[in-house]
Figure (cartoon, each protein chain N blue to C red):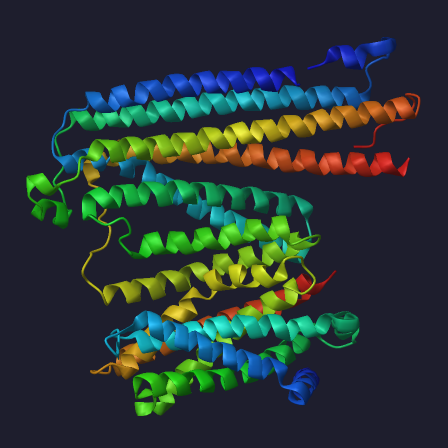
Amino acid sequence: MNGVSRRTQTFLIVVGAVMFAAAPLLIASAPNEATMGLVAKILYFHVPVWFMMFLAVFICGIASGVYLFKGRPAADRLAVSAAELAVLFGVMGLTTGPLWARVSWGVWWPWDVRTTLALILEMNFVAYLLLRKYGGPGAEKLAAGVALFGMFNVPFVYVSVNVWRTLHPETTVVPTLPTAMAGPFWWCVVAYFVLFLVMLGGRRRLEDQRARLDELRFAYEEE
Amino acid sequence: MGDFFRVAWLVMRKDVRIESRSREVLYTTSFFAASCVLVFSFAFVRAGRPVDGAEAGIVWVALAYAGQLALGRAFERELHQDALRGLLLAPVERAAIFVGKLLGIMLLMVLVEAVVIFFVALFFSTAFFEFPLLFVALLVSGTIGFAAVGALFAAMLTRAKSRAVLLPVLLYPVTVPVLIAGVNGTLSLIQADPNLDLARFWLALVTFFDVVFLTLALWTFEPLMTE
Amino acid sequence: MNFVLLMRKNRRLRLSDMRILRTFRAMRYFLRGAVLLVALLLIGSQATVIVEATQPAPVEEFVPIGELPEEERLPAAPFLISAYSIVWILAFGYFWMLSRRLSAVEREMVTLTKRRDDATGGTSESSF
């Protein structure tokens, strides 16, 4: 087994474990003011996660469009990486959102416009990944079409769910973050953006290496 | 331009002719839609009366399910003896082929819709045609939107693996706005206190969706269908 | 990095080997960078927790919880902790999965290159 990877993997686990052990201590050290003050901390990473998912969706859509009309394989590799990240960040957002909503609103799913939009986008890009995996050869182009449609669908879903929701005013919309929290909030946004870039770079590298491996295999079989 | 519509008409006529001989897809899809309505009736009827607004939902859900089934079957036909390749090899604009197939599917869906509305009106005594123009316009534009996206996805999945299950998986998230608009538009027309302005808003939304996605479908049909 | 494999039979280092080496080095730097940034992110998030804790409670715009009497409010801590944990598990899990898949691909590339070079008697020039 590759020595570098194993060492780095072990390092990652150790770092993760240490940071994980530290987190509850830091959370517990925060004084218990209002119950709401504590759970609002979820929003520090729930909202940046949503930003990143949205970003991933648009990157995937645009890259898919380029792949479909220009045929550049690099665009396809970027698209699949972005789609995976959209699904990943979507899962993060769709799990932290209900956890926050349960405490704030008493319901797991508030049916507000942003949550529902996120869910529909998530399903769209899970469908993208399913198509790539199970669609057989040539599925990359088909998936590119799905991503493009998903991206163009965003405003329609937003408007329709928004109007649909305002007809049922029992639960109100998600409030904006208090301005006093702006500093730490934007720190988190930047931090998640950096995380997103690192993940995207890593995933693209994987796709590039896979493509090179395919070339190698092909060349090997030719000889 | 005339050529474009002539090709589309020819493709549609071919489909209609094939279908009229056996009527297989029409009958089976209509029956499936009717059984959908039945199943949903059991789910949404309390003490002999439908849950408030359930009729609108039942119509559009039955339509969505039956439509997706019809789409899959309509394109499956093209697999026999490489008919699809023959169609694509023809020296005509590919978008015209797409429009032709779309028209054929729309005709089928409109017929299925008639069956669904008949049964829902029968079971729940719903006054669907109180505002006939708006209602029909909503139905037609909703069908166009659903069929445009569906026809494109069904066409591109024809030669893919697992196409039967992948079509609904891909189709439903993209056609959510159509379903929302259709259900809520219908609801605002059939409710006790009809809201015509809201119905017109939903109609406008679906029409806009149709324009955007039909354009998108025509635009992407060519690159998606190349081997 | 298995230098022994590449250096076997006193073969001189070739362009293909250099490229593989560069790839592995780049991968190492990338992974180190990834670890550093993840650590930054973790520290940053903990910092926000501390920062928020030292500030006075914000004026809440959340109507329902304000209307709820004290007894009916859910304890927020388990939700907050689960939310944090889920995000970290997912992020680390993804990195782990990436690094594993990447090393598998790299391994196969080395094997394939070696096999091909052995088969052609070590005179071919790689083209990728």
